[in-house]
Structures are given as C-alpha cells and as structure tokens.
Length: 248
Image (cartoon, rainbow, N blue to C red; front, side):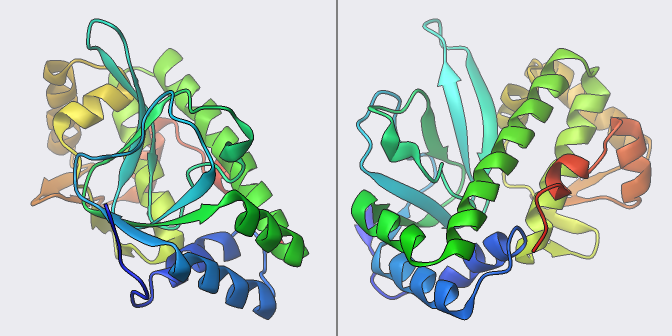
C-alpha cells in the first residue's frame, strides 16, 4: 500500500454517498474533501486493508473499487458478512474498539482514505451535518447487517442471491455506479457463495436459474437486471432498509 497524494476527484464519491443520507453544508464538503485527499492510499486486489485482531487508530473510507468484510473459521470456511462499496466507510467510529473482530479485504484494486482518530474527531466536531451523516451511515450499516441475517436465516437460495443482486444495484446507485440497468460485478462465484451461505455448486445452479428466468444477465463481470421490479419480487426485496435514513 502506498500514498497517492492529491488524486483526482475521489473525494466526490464519499461526498455523494453521505449527501444521500444528510444534506451536507458547503463547509462540511470542503473539510471532508481536504481530509480525504490528505490520506489517500491504494491497495491491490486480494489485500487486507486491516486484519482481525489488529489495533485500530484510524478510519478508512473506500473511494473506488470493492472490498468486503469476512470471518474465517479454523477449518478454513469463510463467511463474507458485507461488501464495502465506493464512498462507504469501514466503520466511522471503529477506533473506539481495541481491535477489529473481523478482516476487511479487497476484491479489486482499491483507492481509499485513511484518516487518523484526532483529525477525524475534529472533522466531526467542525460541522453538525457531517457528524449526522456519518452517524446515519453507521445506522444504515446496522440495517444492512440485519437484512443479511434475514437473508442467511430465512430466505431460500434463489431469494438470497436475487436479494444480494438487488442490494448491490441499489447501493451503487447513489454514487453513480449504475448505468441504466447494469452495474459492475467484479466478485467471483466463490465470493458470492461465501456471502450467501451456499456451496459454489448450489450458487452456480441458482445463478443459472435466475438467468434462465430472464431475471439477470451476467457477462464480462457486469450484472444487468432487465426488470428490477421482477427481480425484487423474486427476492422478496423491499428497499426500505436502504432509504430510511435519507432525510435532510
């Protein structure tokens, strides 16, 4: 991982993400952009941004690329517990913990910002709208996590996979990463299996069923959803858990 210095418009990704949760003041946007650009770093695919058990002293914000949270059992079985998309924070107040209880790894090459605790707390104290936006993001992450528990515990295989595809599509939309009815899907079938609690064989069979039903098209690491409402219906999907905190 290496520092990038000033790097284009990456700060706009997190501004757009947080602005979907709270209307940020002009001053908040300027302060956030400065903090992000001062802490830019890059990681390659398959790297750990932070590993389980490591001490915590900063906040990490993914600006481009995909990452995921996961835990691995002693026998090697892995559970992906969430994906982290551009503009999303790897827990805004994680530095309050003594160590991380899971690992955050990259799917693709990732550009991210690392902001130390003192500057981050100063940033939150400087503007109420910014503090509320990061708090809303934390609450939103909790809502997403509850939905993943329901996905693993109660939905059948086709509903699980369809629901995950709906959620990916909806979480990428606020930062402009959905093109019509298509979005990037750079994960492997093993990643999808580990996110939905299925074997790779069962996951592959489920994807083929979704394809045969005309609900999804997967081609060249791109997910296309011809009829989003139909896919939502198959997944028993309600977007309310992603929209509840979007207010001024």
